[in-house]
Length: 309
Length: 309
Image: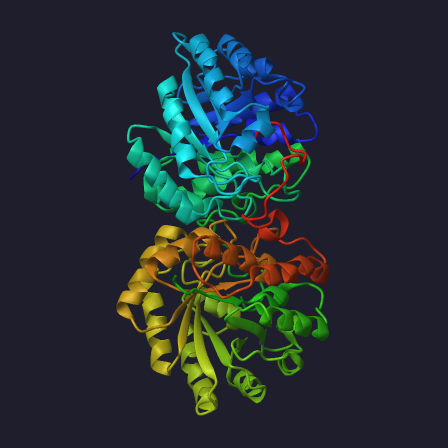
């Protein structure tokens, strides 16, 4: 049985775009609940400007309030040296950096060229050096940019190479706005692994165009065993009101376990957390297993039904 | 470029469970709109008891009111000889029969054993014989039964064999309540194709547990080139209120075309129809492309967005 590592990013990638502030104690309780499910990694917060992302303005309080489970990697998104100092002070297990493969997207996101972003990460590395904090480098818009369209794979290779030279422990290929399709995932991921065989790759998919789990399947076929998901499918797409965001963690775990992969995640515990999440954010969520139940949840033949289906 | 044939079942599998009657002229207009998109097949109605499926009580009026496009196969679901007579009188292109691989599901669905269902289809065949109407045999619960759980593949083989002996032109393996996962789809479909290499197989998936397009990917890998979808993802699951139904036709076409398959479907026309559908049924639909746009729909870098994603 192949082990697949499942990461949850709901508390960061999901909450960051919620219009209402999620109280700190609610975030802490949710992270603690997720910590008990067997997830390999939780992206717990981001050490960014409170003006830029008001919903994550409590990064320190969250990181200091949670109960750490030793088997879980607690990661935090960090944009710059200042964020790295804050994250190190809170003793995060991992810092996640982010650059866009797309020049236009990077400029729109952080008002820098990709070169400026990548060079700036040297300051982050010198802050982190010797602290024992692991480093992950995410590459946004790996599979397509909402402004530029498709991205030459040489851009992606360049970012991976720069990240590895900076000393990253892991690399995340992120489909920021859900533009990846399975053929592309299989081909690009294989090309990255062929060029950088020792890189520890995570795939970060959004289900914006319904292909999220199909892309996971393609990633598995390419040999990737690390995936980001978001509890309940929390998250969204800034360009598509009403569209779904990240792939749903419990739907991902359900598919992987059904296929015989070993995730180490207790799906039932994850489902308890997922079913509480709509009350926390005040709206419905796109996750399917929370509504439909697991494949193994059987029904009584006497239950009302349509006569044909 | 591999040709993939896309069928739409929204007007039958979708409308049959809508609580409100969809007016006949609205059904006819929608089928006519779908006919102009390049779909290979449209399941237009079902010749069933009006008491059992009130929303499809206008089967004759629908079949006689639509404008037939020669390249489209207009199919109708038929449960028995009486339905076959009605369908033949309306000059459908194809009759679709249905039996469950699961004994319990077949009994719950039509109050017969699977053997009684399959034997009864002989009467249907003698009515259809010589009329030029094509025959398709669907196998419900192929990938799992909501009452019995997993179904031995020998049950599926048995149904395929019986259907082929009856003289079916095509066989549909249906995941009636969305229990299939990609590994199973790949293995079972390959096994069916290995045993019955000349059978013209269609895969009918529901997205009840979020795996719909991943299952299509697995089906493509097994060599199947015919897929049922439902416009907008219209449909549902009688056991899971709030869960999604059939895979969404326009999301399916979008993925296939992005991957380089040739569907012959004009996605933009399909999207016009899909975006009108929520007004017809009075509720939101799970299709993603209708909300998020195609991969190729680019945005202006000045558009408001979240600062990180």
